[in-house]
Length: 249
Image (cartoon, one colour):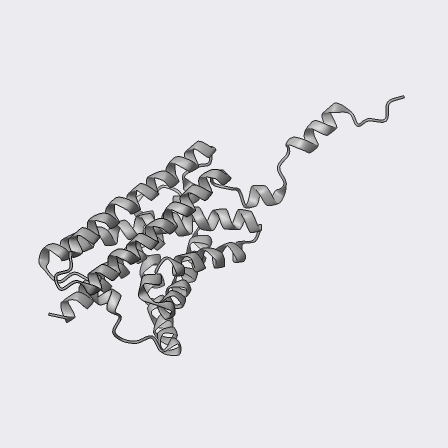
């Protein structure tokens, strides 16, 4: 008499995903993840090189920097979307559910506003605790000074809101959560990557921005969407850059 398990039982055991896999699904394959991570790291390194050249230049080409940022961030965004689609995962995993009504749009705008205000209060305390210098050479070098630079900077701010939230809180955070099978761990690792991406601003600002990224990560996980974070991120970059640039005039 055979002692092997009946075929249906084996099939059910081997094809049914675990509850952990259903709760924390991968959004793309491992090869795609490696290439996207390396591409993002290469862009962050090149961005630091560009910023360092701006700091050292008597006539910095900020528009060139803004143009390169638009190009690379949208390329990385497109590559992330392609990888998710190729994996067969819904784009809502990295973007959030589509808006179906004006009410949902205004709801996310309201959430973004409350988050932004609370984040600024918390970060003001973090800024004081870290003793971050009020003047940052990198930030001063890249903020817009002319009307044309301001216009392109605003495009960059919208791009940063959409692309960086998709890459860090949508794609990377989801992948790290799936790797670690832990939402807190995935959020923390993604926040550390977000901080490291801003190494051009110095180590203290890396810590500061990582904490900001941690708050964005919690928001994305709580809302199951990156859309409120996109709005708040875009506002922060737009207003922060324009106000800092105008204060120098």
